[in-house]
Image 1: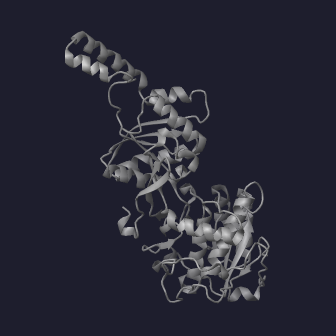
Image 2 (image 1 turned 90 degrees about the horizontal axis):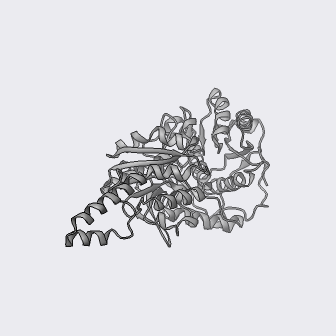
Image 3 (image 1 turned 60 degrees about the horizontal axis):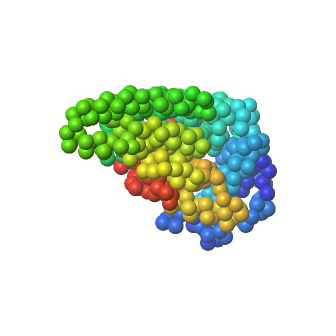
Length: 435
């Protein structure tokens, strides 16, 4: 069992899939159509002993990569699961000289800084992680001064910079993909209802650019305070409910005054209708998740924002079985990695470690696989290789890192249906199909 902070030796086992050392990283992390080797490639169970090989002399020829995760504290269980995912990638792809060094950040700024310093002192040629933006900020200061690249698992693009890549599943990119799909279905008038917090403001900052890029226009944008007593009034105002309700009364009065047979038929059609007149948007961006999304969407339906008329657009956080039966979300769409590879990965993880992996553990697998593949050729452990425009292929599909520290991914479009989320547009297979 490796200690947190101690290097771990790669140990490819006989019979496991390997990667041609001469293949370029842009040929993909997954070497064949069956991307994960048999479970024989990894010692079974959490108790398997792995040799500890760290010493100063060995640093000359070992390819050391640090894995910075919250291995203690309130997020320790998540961090340990991500470490296991990284171990799977190491045994699948790494050469014998590849050393993975898990180091605890405790999920804090200071923890990230201390972990990065420990990684640099131990001779790390690359840092994978940390997970949280605060820890990334702490780690990046140390790593940049030592010229050690950081591939973080955060989805907050504000901590990205040259030499520090944000390789999480970024919500703004998911919205861009889903909004682009909506325009292909004839939806061009966008609105957004966002939480009044850092997450909502982060999304709002680039939303106009995102919508314009896909050919739409952004109109009404409103913020709400999650859980506040004012939430109902905020959504009532956003839906322009009172004016549309008044329009209905006026229209009914006109029909009644007319008194013709056609007017009487029109009045009958308005029975049970709460409002009259179209909204000024036909696509609505809703990045809320969980119980908050359930509450917001039900209030939208109550104030007559009909999801069969307005296309609701979410993020990968909508991929929650607890939300699929919500009537107000039926037909809503969100962008996500194609689910097939994840299902294979999750099944293998459970067989190996005895538990289901957290969804973001794939980030640790893909990033470790990338580092292990690059390490097969020392000349490939460079920023130029990391930012290959052709990108890479992993559990979550295609991804690539850009020189400014951002990442790009190819997402599928999922639609919420009562029996689950279904793929209605597959993820692209290459980046010339993404935008």
